[in-house]
Image (cartoon, rainbow, N blue to C red):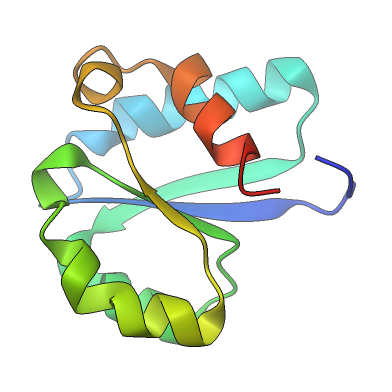
Length: 107
């Protein structure tokens, strides 16, 4: 990550409930590495609104919300927001280090 400007990463899942621990682990991993990152989560249903109205530098999608990619693809393309599906193993084990590595590929 070349810039020192904080990047904002939205993580979406079906309800936005189970992603809280993963978000915390990603944020902790970023903080430990000195990566200027703000990670937050939301239910997939509000992702479209967030993409349109907020500054989002990357979108991580929970494996159970894979179907949302098709619905959001046009918004993501217009706003030039990179996105990636979180691997099921990483999501289930709340592996913040691995998901952070994926996020860093955006930049």
